[in-house]
Length: 288
Image (cartoon, rainbow, N blue to C red; front, top):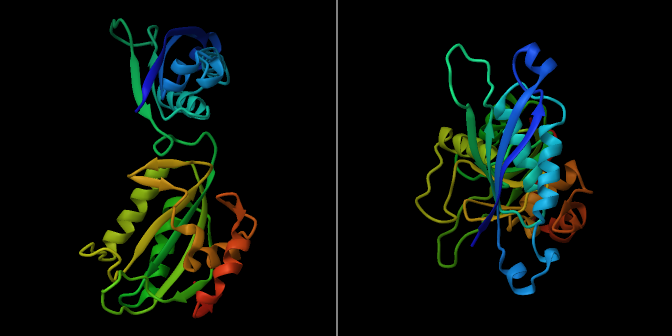
């Protein structure tokens, strides 16, 4: 469950706006911020240490509002949301930005923007490392993976690509045999939200004919978001870090080739890869 603590009417003179005179002279802005958390521990203990202090949140939000100016309300709202979600225990946040003195050619009482964000939907304040695992066992998989890598580069910019590894297919008990999988891992830095990167992976799967007829069935392309910055999520839509990554050679081995010191659930990826590396049947380092 999530309860909501609201900070309503947090106001300040700030300098956000598209026009130079707005950034020079400033105007009044008002924020309403509702952050979601489980308040039962604080209700039982009657102790501020068991909650997320609204005084601390108000101070952090006021710092964003009166800090370096943004041109758009959308950018200001995203930064406020990211700031609130940095508090441990906050599961979601709603931000309403009011700009009652917005320069318009007609008279209005207010201009406002409302957004709701969670750890997997918020826009990061700065680029974060996003780790994608790609694989398949139907068709010309290396060619499919090359095409997918090219698309990710177009969408995300600079991308680091791990080696290609061949591993036995993971199958359900009682299911028939499948061809081996070819897999790789990509690392990118992006300001897309985790959900936006997930959507990119799903578009790639669809473009390459991915079908979901059976669990762990053969597939032309499978794209998993393994990690996205420091995001931790138990949302069924997107679990982060990916819970299966901790012991899967087809993720750990190519990831370790890129960044052996990256931490996954408190342990370096290189250490984890060394424990399962014997599951790799073949490795190709120069393949893109």
